[in-house]
Amino acid sequence: MRRALIPLLAGVMLAGCSSPEPRFYALAPVPGAAAPARFHDIEIRRPGLAGYLDRSDVVLRFSGYQLGTDSQVRWASPLGEMIGRILAQNLAQRLPGAAVYTDEGAISADPDARVEVDIRRFDPDASGNVVLDAAYAIERGSSHRPLSTQTVRITEQPSGAGAAQQAAAMSRLLGTLADDIAVDLRRASGPGGPGLETSAP
Image: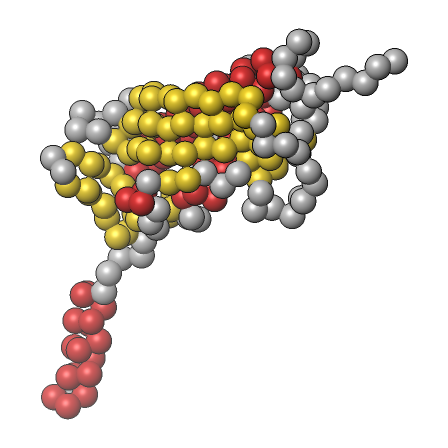
């Protein structure tokens, strides 16, 4: 009996010491004001990420020169890919009639405009506000001629504590960033702007 109990007790102890399953989080599109632009095909390049953000673990805090993560709180897909995909979805909703796609997808058509984004910070600060510090550039697709270059720093207060609330705040910030990019795309492609050339009748 004693010999039979030893493997059973060992199994119970191992089960008690096993780590919990990780929790996975994802960003989501956020709707905004819709108005068309004269660009027909818009490509979103995979955003550049600061190195400390380019990880599977969600950065839960960054203060006092210390980065806070939890190995059980992870992104459902690579953060750079996810941000690019969500920006494309946001812009497609804001620019009806335009085909908006990422450079990592199956579409390989030459775009009329290309959007490049560099993200320097995208995490909570010491007070708990999520900070998005980024720069973006809009280029003429075929010639890479710059049409607009902007820097943004925006913040969002999560509705509560926890990774789900942080992901929701980050999603809203990407919606605000998409608003700004959509405005610049409309301006660049508008009458008299440097966007699409029009042919003579």
